[in-house]
Image (cartoon, rainbow, N blue to C red; front, side, top):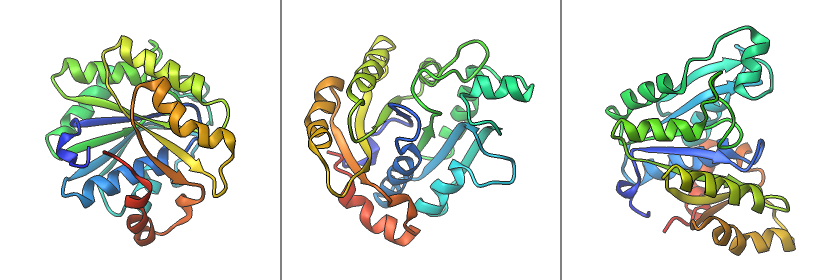
Length: 234
């Protein structure tokens, strides 16, 4: 995976839960892909918990990775799963197939589209129960190559969620490309160190890197300089 041309045209970024560092990991992926000569765009299918005038995940990715095309399909103010936030807002969510069509339109404009999910792999993105996993399946039905990157928390409680995510992807014939550990502490403990070997073991996917705690507070220049030392894509 050192050559971005080996990546699928769409990379879905999901997490073992909320707040594990998906946005910073997405920015790191985008920065690394672009530094190796490929064009990249970022999509956030559903942004929740952010009001209309506030900066969201797409803004944060662009701030950290530098200027790049970003696309936000939905924005809902309540900090809930998209379907729950939509019910509270009294709006109807488009089906996952619509998101797949929009992502597909972007594939022809750039080398790689990185799609950041909301929460975990099976969080509902529409009223019909469509999820990020279903988005991946829909993209493959449309003839696009698609794979998943899992962002895991550093400490205890991550292995079960990581294993369930890998199992759900396997049932859908979606490849798990790699695992990134978010918010890696400066002084890791036993649980964190164990996850370096246990996460690849339970998921069957390689460890792509560790994003240190506080990386999201860096400016773009420092972020770009340090990304290669954090990411161990091989």
